[in-house]
Length: 120
Image (cartoon, rainbow, N blue to C red; front, side, top):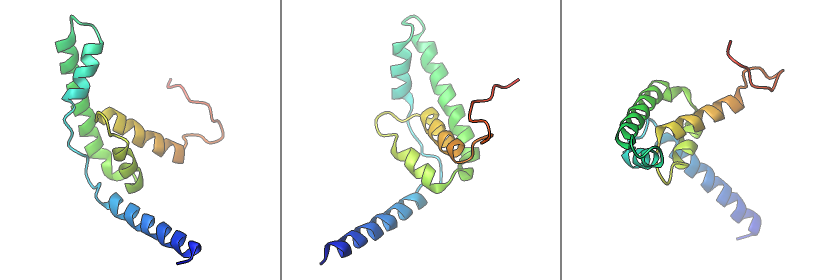
């Protein structure tokens, strides 16, 4: 096979694989965030580690609930990409941040003024 044909086959194969992987991310993943929250809680104040763990887990569950409501509003490609970036210690906060950054880069609030706007 010629080099050009091999490259074309590789590009088509990657495109087909990428499209099929996007379809698999049709709902928010179910992750156990206790490991991530435990690490965050232990990094904080030693005296409040149990309370920090509880707050972290509650916050992650609230973020997951909000993601469930908004999930279909994010493009499938962004959902797949952002889920894939969660390889070490899954958190819904990082997933939400990734999705929001991709959305905001695609649709800036005010393209005439690139500076962030403060809420009044």
